[in-house]
Image (cartoon, rainbow, N blue to C red; front, side, top):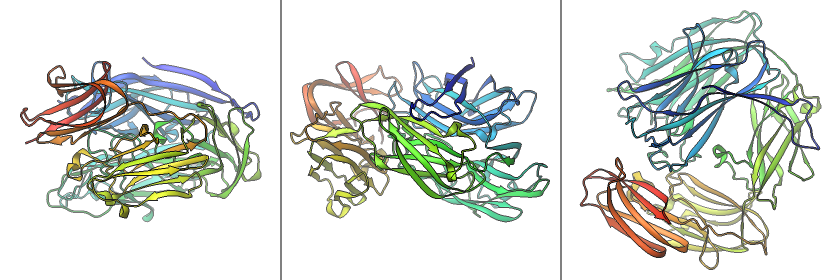
Length: 636
């Protein structure tokens, strides 16, 4: 069933109304649809028809929003598979991959888990018209009876004058190409493509979806760092390393090797395509060529999964046109949860959609009910490029939650050519309040040389820091902070990108980090499996009531074991606690149950070496509610 929702978004700012209200329509092709594998084929297709706007309707922007949840009566799926979102126009045989999703390792997600991603697919506006077949293709071979995903595909369409006249889309490459095979090199397929520009073309861009997969002796293509070049008329236009660091993935922790860096992707990631812009003369003949870094291996198995398009554009519709792309902080969007290092300072992303380079813009910003603040930014952003702006004054409200507003004005001191995308609002959530005196509890693992932890104010001034040279293995440190009123950021960094514990590196041991009050009660627990960093913003306000983190801290280590498993439990309040160990494939088969009455904190070790070598779950249940669940792989 296709859901179409039409609504109007006007500015909610009484003092700063924009003259052009945003006219937005949401077209949902897949609505909380259960997606599972087809092990017999390795992929499963979910085709749905949707009605998009007619070609006569002007489109300003299209954002694809993708939501994953655990399915009803099933658990979240286990593996990091490649999913494709393709569209095909009615009576056409050509399909277009408009988005690519790399699924997360979902083995430890709870039933109420959910995550949202988004990607700008405005470039595909010319084909996202009228009746379309929208195909969500889920690949993989895992069991499809007990696990899967609940997926929602939402096309958020903003109507209005486009940035530039959209003319033509050429699909120039589409394949799963072997990489490293000297008998059949990838360049046999990535050959130059000759095109003739439209008579109205002024510029074009190459848009590429590319991810590396497979595993040869060098780790290629998934775990090897190679470059790719884009050539325009035989000359190198762009060079990119196809590599992504995964330790700061906002979706964490996951069950598998989520921290391992990969070839242009991470588990639990909606691919953000590569775009390379170039000038184009009307009617011009030209070639585009993609070249991979030369590479050969004796037993090739690497694959480069690559789709590329050339998109031609006509005239740019405005000389001066700035767009507020997004509010990064403050925000309640999970994809930005690791991008809040500036603490109380707001961060926004802007884009120059005007023909002239953007060299100045006025930024008005404020929390609901407050007088707007004004910041005049100066810089130099070419057409089509974006920039992150950190706004100079701290943002804080005594309200637990309110709205934060931003509006852009006067690009280059001129009237904006399109004001409809100059303002946005986001959800502001007040940071936790800490007392003037608090304690950092930090227990190292076996690799303390990878760690530092620090406290800075909003403007980056160091207030406290303990460097890796100060830390010894398997040692607990308790550092007392005495802070004046203000906003601060507590940061833990791990140079290894594997946190204080990671199941795949059991020999590295496990550590713990918490913020305590002077009575030893937890103000904030942190998950030890954090990858590259922990970033925690807080405010110190003398005399204000601070809240304790009364959810228990539960850590199980290691997840791969020959028998012993240790559970570390810490809580502020005494509760009756059950620890239940079950088989993974049939959770009704309980192998051990341990009950602890009036329990507050402790460390326990369970020896499971007597059990058959398979996978199990360790669950913690409090007052009848499952509050923790992690997988145990019992190995030989």
